[in-house]
Image 1 (cartoon, rainbow, N blue to C red):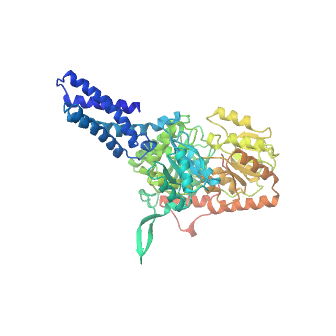
Image 2: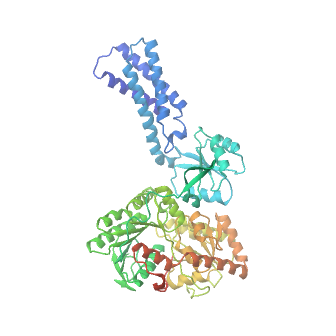
Image 3: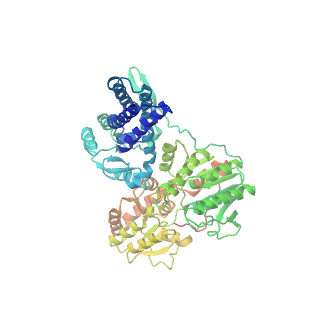
Length: 633
C-alpha cells in the first residue's frame, strides 16, 4: 500500500513535468495540482485494492495484471476529470489527467512484475510466499509433499493437507478460510471432483492444480470428433518441441571420449562405475575409447584394459572440481584432435557443449538426476545446475536421462524429450565373496547402507532409526562426508554402539558386503537411477527404500519395502529381524528378478552403442563383459 501511494505521487509529479516542462504555472494552480495528486494517490490505492492488485493472484507467475490495472487507472483518471470539470471549472489540464492515467498503468503493471521477480529473493524471509494445500491422504500425498519440498528455497509454502473425503464445496470453503493460492490434487483424482472444485473457486484467485500421472503425459486431446451425434475426444501423442536425438550418429562411430567423471578404474561413485562399464563395452566392440581422469582419483597411468586414460589436474573444491576438470578435458580433446564422439556426464558440465559442438564434436549428454534439488548446494550451485539444464536441452546432440521420472521432468519443465537409459547392475550370487576382515560382521547378520554422506541422502536418519530400533543386527554404513565435517559428526553421534562406519569400500570387499547383507537401506531423496540401489537389488537384497517417485520407479514391483520417515524405517528394521528364512528368500528372489529384467550392463552398453551409430546384430553381440570387482558408494 505505501509503495502504491508513493508510485502514484511519482506518476502525478512526472505527468506534471511532462505536461508543463519549463512553463510558468501560477502558485494557486500549483497548490491545486498538489492537492489533486494527493487525492489521486489515495484513490489509486483504493482502486488497486478493488481491482484485485493486492491479491496473491496478482503476483502469481504467468498472471496478467494489465486488465485490472487499466481499470483501476481509468477510475482514477475519470475521478480527476470529474473534479477538473466540476470543481476546478476546467482550470486543471486534461493532458495532465491523461498522462497521470497512463503512468499509473505503467506503475501498476511494472511494480507487480518487479515484485513477482523478487519473490524468490524474498522467500527465505517468509515474504511474498504463495500458499498451497494438498488434497488427500496416505502415501501418495506424502510422496507428493516430499517431492515439492525437497529442494530448499521454494517460493511457496504448503500449509497443510485437506481430507480427500470432503466434498468439493467443503474443500472450497476450507481453501477460502486458509487464504490459499491453490489446491493440489493427487494423481488419479476423480475428474468430476476436480471440475466441481474448479467451478466453485472460479474467479476467486485460487487455482486447482492436478498432479499428472506419468502415463497421462503421453495423452493429450487434439480435437473433438462427432460420430453419429456422439462427441468423442481425438487423442494425440504428446510431442515435445525438442527431440531426444538432435543430430544423426556417425557410422561407423570411430573413437569415443568420456568426459565429466572422476575417471576409471572406478573408485568413487556411480558415474565412475558407469564410465568404466561403458568404456569396456565399447572397447569390446572395437571402438577406441578415451576416458578423462582427475589426478587425485587416477590409479592407472595411460591405459587400462584397452582403454586410453588421460589424467588432468583440477581445483579440489566442491563447486569447482567437476566443472574445471571438464573444461580442461574439452580443451585437451579439441587441441589434440581427440575423438569426434563425446559422452558427457552431468548437466553441470553443459557449458562446455558449445565449445565441443563448435569443434565438430557430437555430444551425448547424460544429465544425471535433478542435482539442483540437493540441499548441499547453495543458491549459486542451484543456479549453475538450472543453467546447465537450460543449456542441455538446447545444445546437446543427444539428451539422455536415467529414469522415467527424470525424463518426465524434462518433458514438462523444458518441453524436451530424452532417451531414457537406466544404470546397470551385476547379478551377484548370494553368500559369495569374502567379507572384509576389518568389518566385524557375519553373513546374513547385518544391515547395509551405501551412500556419500550428504543431507539429501539422510545418513543421520538411517543411523538414528537403527539406534532406535534396538535390533541386534549391526548397521554397516559405507561412505563419508567429504565436504561436510559437521554431518560426519552428526552421523557418528546418532549411530548405535553396534554400528560400523568404515568409510568407503570398493572392489571385492564391497561386492561381498552387498551379497551377504540381511537387508539394504536406500535413503536418497534426489536423483534418478541410484547405482547402489540396483547393485543391492542385483545382489538379491531385501531393500528398505525411502518412498520417493524416483526410488519407487527403480525398485518397482519387486520385494522392496518403502518408508517415509525415521519412525517407519525403525519399524521396518524390527520386521526384518523377525523374518524367517523362507519369507526373506521370497522377497530376495523378487528383487533379484526385477533387477535382472530391468538393469543389465550389456543392455546399457548396447543402448549407447546404438546412439553412437555402432549397433551390431544381436547374433553377433559378444557375451556381456565381466568387469573387475569394482563398485562403490
